[in-house]
Amino acid sequence: MVPAHPIHSVRTTLRLGVLVALLGVLGAGSAASKVGRKRAVKPVSTTVKAQGTDCGALRKVKAPWLSVRETPGGRGDVVEVPASLERRVKFWMRVWGETPQEVTLLVDRAHPWVQHAEVDCQDLFDSHRSWAVASKDCQRRVTLMRKQVVARLKSGRDDLRLLRELDGQQAWVKQAPRNVVAIRGKRAELEAAMRRAGPHLGHVENVFGTTRVPAHYARLAIVESQWQTDVVSPSGAVGAFQLMPDTGQRYLLIRDGVDERRDPIRSGRGAARYLAEVVKGLGSWPLAITAYNSGPSRIKQLVKRHKTRELGHIVDAGQRGGFGFDGQNYYAQVAAVARLTADRDMPSEPPRLETVELRKPLPLATVAACLQQTPSRLARANPALGSAVVRGEQPVPKGYVVAVEVPEAQRGPLLATRE
Image 1 (tube, rainbow, N blue to C red):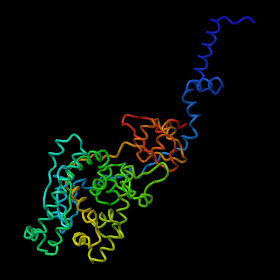
Image 2 (tube, rainbow, N blue to C red; image 1 turned 120 degrees about the vertical axis):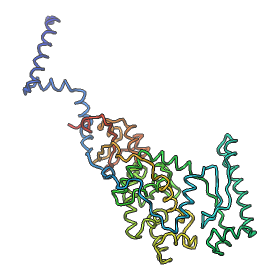
Image 3 (cartoon, helix red, strand yellow; image 1 turned 180 degrees about the vertical axis):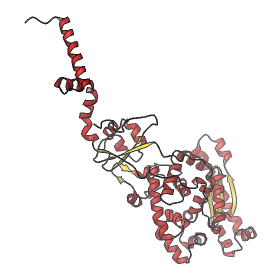
Image 4 (cartoon, one colour; image 1 turned 30 degrees about the vertical axis):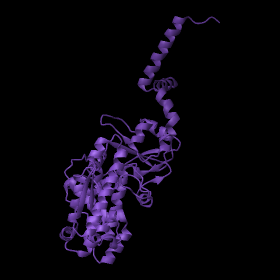
């Protein structure tokens, strides 16, 4: 057979191409037009076939932690401080707002506004190249000063001063030598925490307000963790809001590969829902916030024992009241941080996020492809995802709501492969 002339073949191909294109534009139902349309979108069509079934498992939803309203009063509303706690709150305002971390205050454990000495280690940190070495030398200096303070208190030379500062309570004066405690300055910690909280705090406060919890109590996460989302306590509390596993599972998704306690917005909503429930049984926000640290059962026992709901009176009972130092001072620290940062103008706009729910487990790479994202970018928007999920060793579990950062300029449907 004699092969066709090359020029004739080109002309024939061009004529067929033009015919197919015209048929496609006119919407003719011929087989040639269908072939033409498929060829025109072949790369996209192939992707859809490869991922279409998986992408169909993504359902766009409106996440409750994004559906919030602007909190009336914003972040300037006044935190509730009982008169009996005022001196304690002012002390912690000094620790968090004025005292650098190189300075340690030696104070009375039960009445921390009673100060015995101040130890400044700035010279040690300036002269040492190693922070660890300077810290050890500073600790030795603090220990030496504490011994001197205890000796002075035992001698009785400070009794008159203590009587004035301890409201004339002789019993507290006698206990003073046993109650000396060292408190290191937290000014730098507060500034670092506010920087970390910046992208999320305003929105989380609106989440609190929507849940009928005063917005400023969202700042308890600064006391809990300095707003570190990946911190884990020895007792198993996780995330900025330091939720325990049993509490977290009541309000959040916690399973293999996912722990929403690591997401500051989702865990913030979980913390707010928990507080809204606790306050119903305790009757006041100071008691409810203290229960966040010490547990509702213990607070109820203390209220019953002391026959009062006045937190200041319960706290002043000291260790006899069933509190450790942290429990005694927890609310005072939250109130101090709220006061110190009340005028900080934090962004309150909700994050530019879209959310989709997985109706079956899928690898993160597949989810990212369906959502026109890279896996790394999707992982950054979803800090609840564990390292095994991010590495592709585990799928994103069914039921997880994936957050997707959507730039303001981006247009078009969220699911790239939706047909």
